[in-house]
Image (cartoon, rainbow, N blue to C red; front, side):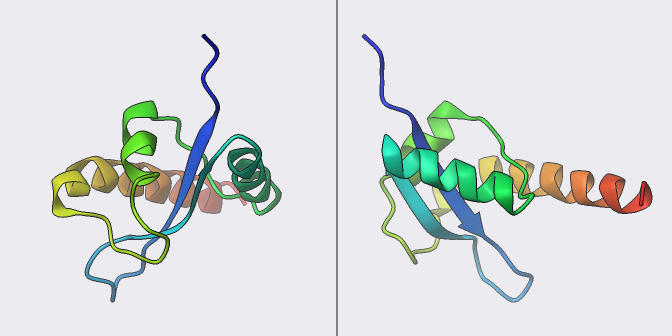
Length: 89
């Protein structure tokens, strides 16, 4: 069976206690989230299990402590990409 695509977007700033879910959805909503990220040059990380969890969090809510470690790895990865891209400019 073909599962519907899911996507979630996070926002994190140094003064936040935890990252916040800014968008989440399935199907066409997921496609729009992904398209917006691509248009804005926001890195996209594919992680089905984490996306499933993030899609169950209300928009505007902080992520639960149970997924801090997984999200921290993604933030570190995105930070590395940003540093690399900044160095190549």
